Image (cartoon, rainbow, N blue to C red):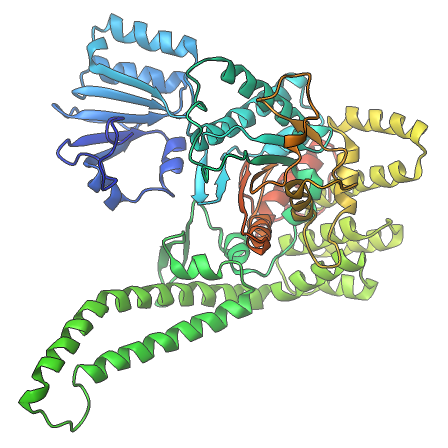
Length: 604
């Protein structure tokens, strides 16, 4: 795209002689930011870059590359820029395919202002997603959980959200150039998205020169990948619980956004860091528990010191060594080696310093809020299905922010088998003592009480309850019920990971026999064909309504554990911290009128 949509040359950079300007909107800036740094832009001959809604001065004789969402406002800005002849030529790249009416507006607008000759190309890039790591993407669609579970949402609004999610997923598949086999649980948003995506792919495959005809480069195997679609209610707890692994902690506590974060520096002042695959320490240790990471930093530091001493020793910095001419050649060699190893050593030192700083800030937070005990107790509750009452109230009256306590209380609700009324009341009282807004707690309690009545009812009256619940919640409660039960098996594996593993193996398994299969390449009638069963080498897992690093880490561990190693990509509508997700639950609680008397939950 930066090479004016010409193929890039062998070194992978664009033609540097052509200087150009890059113009993007806020959404596309987020797509670019984790992928390309300013220094990389320079390599591609981009000298200036601007947001589209800023006032810009004319720059003559220079082509401008636009990368924006196809929206009415953006089209109007482009027409205005062209009519004022701000740039020599306009190369327009839209993040998803531009709708016909907007294309016509663009044509008529530039015709009327006699600037149509300035528009040299219009491209649909199919890039409506943010790639955070090689196997992690997000559609950056805000609050989809609230929108999909809002009791007041009408069919039209739900359809619009589903459509947006489908078009985002379509962009991901178009970029990978694969048509996967789609699996999902019955009912709820997951089935809606799966069947709409199936239809969209079918319609697209009908045209001759479609985006998938080249066969694509996704590990370029003959076998197609499987796409498993889930909805956040499938496993609610993972979005809320405290996790003690490094990557999840950095995200949850320090607010990692688009692979960047800012923390308090050692000498005061804020420091901003980038954490992505170019950081070897982050890539290697992101999935370790925090104490192990601290040990690893220490190890790396000692190794670095040893290497520095080694360089000093070799370049004759040793005391009292007499210098005679014979060793001159050897010494020069050592000096050359030392000079060559310096950049690598400096780089290692920077990485160590960065992670030392991050870990120190994290440690402070962990101590202040005793996050380690939250993580441990929540895990125990999940595995044992409950907690001793005194211990429960002890945590709620102990250290931790209001949000920590609220999250802990919700996990208690989700993990206990039956609702013990007096215990729940004392939990609510404890939360109110700490001035916590209990909306989210009330909301989960409401879902939970529906589940309990569901479980006890027989099948005939059960369907009545489900109908009633669907009217209330706008989606199937049975999906939620299942999600509340399948919390953590004894080996602490997430339900999501367990199901994905079963879907990839493709053996008969009672947990997944009811899952739906969509194959966009197959004729509509012949549904149960055998090649769809697997086993699959590659999978994409998509979570509707907000994902997190806990699930991402768990799936990567699964992929590494397999023999031979499999490939799993994890994607979600947006990456949420536990706090952001609970805020969405709070909103839903308010929408259902489940208020609380406490002060609004602040973050501290």
